[in-house]
Length: 92
Ligand SMILES: [Zn+2]
Image 1 (cartoon, rainbow, N blue to C red):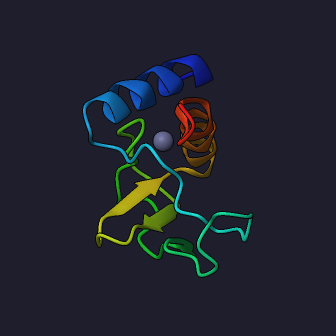
Image 2 (cartoon, helix red, strand yellow):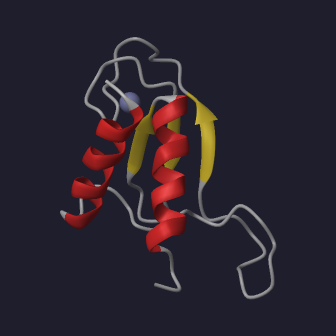
């Protein structure tokens, strides 16, 4: 699956509310909360968990959000999702 295809799926899922549209703040930029509300952890279930972006098994990154939702991605897909979050971003 190529990058464009994964990006398209991510956009659809963000529109459908399946994927978060914001990146949990990990930085201390002005205006952002100083404490991270989300974090990335290495996932021990490598090879089993499906990626939230492309549906293929083998997601390596787990992203936990303040509401308790855990979204898992491949490393590459996680980067694509972040790019999309920045594109649609909190500033529109
Ligand atoms: Zn993926």
